Length: 257
Image (cartoon, rainbow, N blue to C red):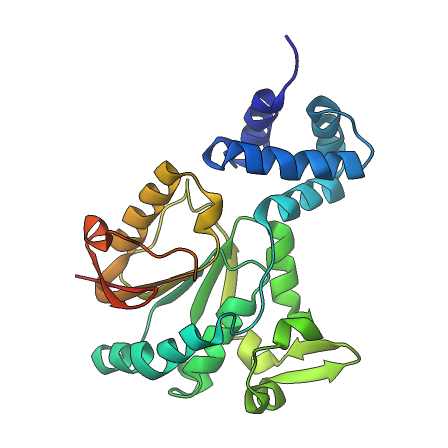
């Protein structure tokens, strides 16, 4: 039997626990074909054989699969709503916020959340969980060093306070890095902790099938405490939030009923 994309997805699932069937096939297949051709392979069989032997190639595959395109304060107006409206309400209900940055990619998002929270709380009282499926992205996040373009939206005062410049790169300060705990998680397969005040998951759901999206939104809703908020990306508006036990608090912010 010919080795095809379907067999590749089964082998990857066995090796990594990642189920590529839950991603849009045409989009993912195109992205991965581009990667293996760039690396000098001509089909999925040869590509998988190489992945088995080469940890670096496996990391590159994971990196390509998870599309790490992000920056600090991405869509700055939405972060202003979080800062001025959502966080004050949440803190009014509970001073010890449980916050999760889901599919955090290379760390810009959870570090942004920590910087915003520092407007309201001493850093010692801030704790954020950040998860991603990609070991490569998590390693970059823990390093906390970013190209200048990643800081385009960062307010100047925050840039001076929480970053140190080294040539064209900027390092996040240790006091912000220490507020974030990174761990690996598969949103489709792994357990979600309960009773979160805020879950931030942005610019990721567009890569999932409708069935996978529904499953994840249900799980996010269950992982929020009543009054807790899900903050999604600017192309990911939930058109029927009541289906998940949520209601719109602001554009792209959904409160658990």
